[in-house]
Amino acid sequence: MKRIFTLLLFIGLIFSCVPEDHVLELELVNNTSETVKNLRVFTAGEKVSFEVDALPAGQEIAHTLQVPGDAVDGKYTFRFTRNNGKEESVTGSYLQEGDDYFKKTLVFDIQQNAVNVSHKNLEVK
Image (cartoon, rainbow, N blue to C red):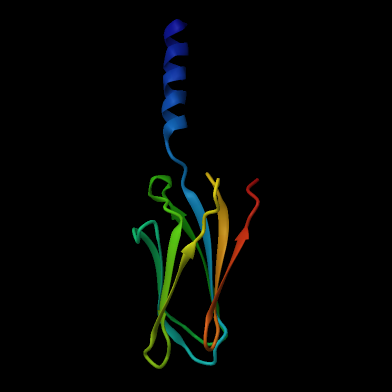
């Protein structure tokens, strides 16, 4: 009986030390009159990424990204190429001070002359 209790305690300690994955929801919205190409979102020191070849005018894409807990640095880079061949890049952070575990949505709204980035925190139930 003592061995079973010790074994269960040991297993519980091991699983409590395993880092949780962080969930990052991405929404890429093209609010221009032209297709944008080579859309890439990099996180965790560019270790985890999401990319799409093209996003037609007026369309949007949603994607869920699992960022391993041991790779979370809180930074993102969003890059894409406009129809005229000009590459644009936006960097920022998706973590707030004190966040340990999160589920957050990053919305990249591509406008004719700019990119607006907004954050939405989602409640985890």
